[in-house]
Structures are given as structure tokens and as C-alpha cells.
Image (tube, rainbow, N blue to C red):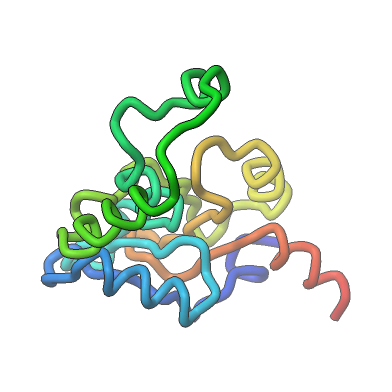
Length: 151
């Protein structure tokens, strides 16, 4: 079995060459229930992802790191993060794009895709599927692989 047999072919994407604000992306994330949205160039090729985590990361104060915050008895309160989010929401999605994407071709064996999903690092929990010219044609999650067996 191959990636094309388990992928979801209806993929909600953001287009790099359009004027999309972070707030627009956040609304799409909320309405769709997704955690991340692929970003494609004018040829439909994936160039990155916008995730709820990447948006939140930009709203945290620059000094905020896991190590520092774990040592502090208090940190930035949520109100300050929400204030920062208001500013972040007005910026372009270019400010929150994670350029590291996990991509496979349509004919990648599903066992390889499963191994990639188990070993993902960073924000993404998806594998993007491209055709032979690199255009995004689908997406695969661990749920896609597991639920395929239930059918």
C-alpha cells in the first residue's frame, strides 16, 4: 500500500502569494478543528505550515523559554500574551510559517509514512503528500493510517 491509498485529498491550505493575516489563519484553524495548515506557493508546492503553536510562539515574550519559565515563580500572565496576540493577529502569515515540512511522494510505502509519523519532531503531526512535480495533493495523519484498518 502507498501514501496515495491512505491520504486525505481534501486539504485546506493557505496560499503564500495572498495577503493572509495571522488572524485569518487562526480563524481557519478554529473553524476547521485542525492544528496546522499547509502553506503552498503559486504552483501548489508546499513551502511550510502555519500552526496554532507557531502563532502562540510569536505571542510569547522573547525571554520566555521552557528552562527560564520553569525556574520562575511567576511569568507573563495570560493577559499579556493575549495583548501580544492582538498584535500578532494583524501581521502577515509570513511571520508564523514553519518552513520545516515533512513531505512524501504519492508512491511512498505506507510503512515508511508510519515510521515518519512516529518519529516527527517539531510542530507538525502530518505528512504532506506531493505528486511527481511537487504539488500538494494530500495529507496523512496517524489517524488516517489507523482508521483505514477500521474500514
